[in-house]
Image (cartoon, rainbow, N blue to C red; front, side, top):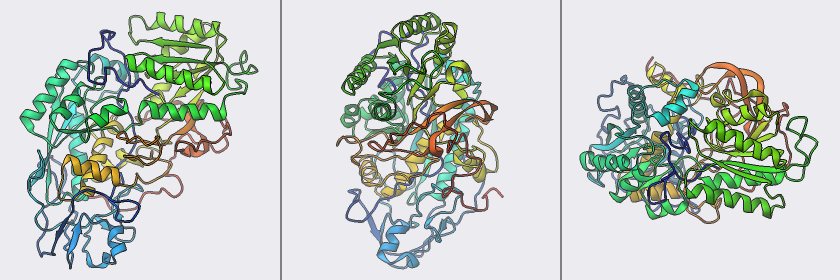
Length: 596
């Protein structure tokens, strides 16, 4: 339920920004891991308008899929394979089975034909795609030639005080150089296993010239990227302004995770160029409201402190106001609570400014306590809860804290920095997945398996990996005729990612979840969790400590309309803080590491 934008939908100036800026929608941590399953389907229910290429079999070997001089190891993965009859590209393993030709395709060593999926140790690995031979069409879009696809990896300005304010809270010391090297290793992984139809990736690293809120620098950077590199796609962008994505779209450059979450019309107006991974603010709010209606309204505040636990719940909303869109979202939430018969007793907006946050926290907590609020719904940034919870304890006020799918507030590394007497009463909704040991699953483990070394940006790999995961999954689903339009058509027509507990479910287009509105923003489901102040284990950056989020029913995930009515908060039965091994049915495959 994050504020929808830190600027207007058209990238207009926000006069309320302080020197440090409001921290909203920063670095969405969507733990997608290494494999996003987005292959085109050929059945009656799922069709794609992406152009296909039909070629006769040739006795040629496709170009090597290794990266262009990234320093990554030679994987030795055999990606060759010539169909023995005419086929239409792209061709997934399941499509080949449907056509009865799977035995006629030489899938190569990168494919495990026993499962029909790539031979990588990841339950969420996508289907194998038939190795391409023939003419790929050459230039099919700006940044796409017969030999390569130009992709720009945007990295925020080094020492940006806004981002540093957040990362310093959890001692994340990854450098921009380490970030860039990690992306190179990820690209090498995808090039080795994903089908790119005779093309390689020309990866360009670009460091921003302005801070996360600097709209002028963001537009200038987008213009420089478009004019100097003529890329097909850009991965990443400034964390707190939509100006970068807006400018890229105007110049017809596709981008992924290049803007904080925006209203739906921002994406439709810039179709097919701007794509997100995290759920939108309204989508998150829909999950939170359904959770509150089904599990909390009409009951006592039993998860709060002694002074409130026997009282009927009285809700208050605390939210980060970073633009007019933030206020609109809060008003929508308040109206929904009215409709559900539980009007908000108090609403308090705040702006994150290190110079004034303590004073603001005092005012907000005083307001909530005076209004008789038993249950604070928090929708904000990951740093401010330190001040709010410290102040609540100072005022001897111990309400329930409902985490309203707030970005990074649902991360253990940040939650450990909050007042633990308060956060012992915290629970709510997250679109993150139940955690697994990062050294044995997900992007960190996949990177180490492929390269033989840990990611250079070992604290940030979970943030870096999702964008290329989505990009490469769609590119191999598109086929040879790659363009922004075929990228969109393939993504909209594709089924969502493989459902599970240890990964979120992503889908795009109108899949019936969001009232007929085309979805450009990815994650659709969510799960419930609560804070356990005495549990011990590693946080998201592998640091041992005390305090862990516990995921209800082992992290079982819900799409809109599926939330249960049973309140299982603070019930250890069935709750899981971290999976040391993968959840049942999501075990990783056992394949030899290319790095030996």
